[in-house]
Length: 327
Image 1 (cartoon, helix red, strand yellow):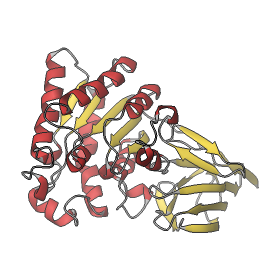
Image 2 (cartoon, helix red, strand yellow):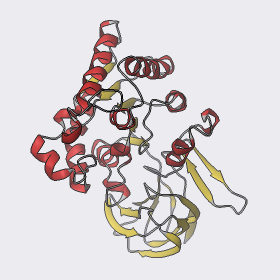
Image 3 (cartoon, one colour):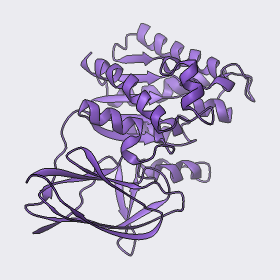
Image 4 (cartoon, one colour):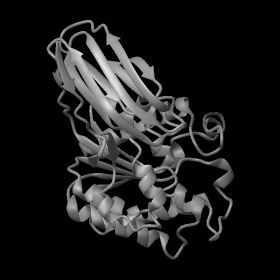
């Protein structure tokens, strides 16, 4: 038996506290501007999309950590199939015996995608265990709570995780619930990350918080994309407009704009950048991801999809994103 510590993927950095516990950072913290970015830092410290894998035979997985009461669970997969879903709220230590069908199987752990969380230990003791090496195109998905996917039952059921697994991609989930506000620190982090595909699902948080008006929204998107484009001149960028939220479509917010206004303005910016010669930027119409009936059925709070809704998002977006990467 060989004991191998987890080697994590999908984050900007891993920090360790004085006791040796790990916290996972999805944004370059040097770009924060406290106190205004306090909520952003909180969301970026959640471990959405972060995972580790081993090639091994049967063995024992040990996971020890501490999560907030609202922490999502861990998912443990064997050869791509969910084997265990383990709670991460409170202090915990899970020791799981895995009966792996064949040697050199792939054992994966996905960390809780939502909630305050720190990890004390993650090890696999198995026959011939070695860290698994990821392959495939590197894709980063930036967005709001609809990309963060708090409502998904587990971390492998977020739409970015489902798309990445379906398309064979390495994923970086930069979903930031309530904090997708086109912050420079997010653009700078994306600029620093080696990538083959970028998606930006923008607009809903700007509508809900009335962050940008008709005067400022287009410029904020333009500046955000420009920072990324300077670092990634030939990487495809897919800009996804907001998915349907029926009560918000025509309802003005505090700056007088409806969700439909933000959607049209987002599309207009992409069209202008295309006319100016950016052949690597693409638009995906978020309003076409769900029909109006599906939005009624799959968005219980009229804003966030449920687990089945995220699966539907993945099924609709995966081929569109794959086509953009091929282009």
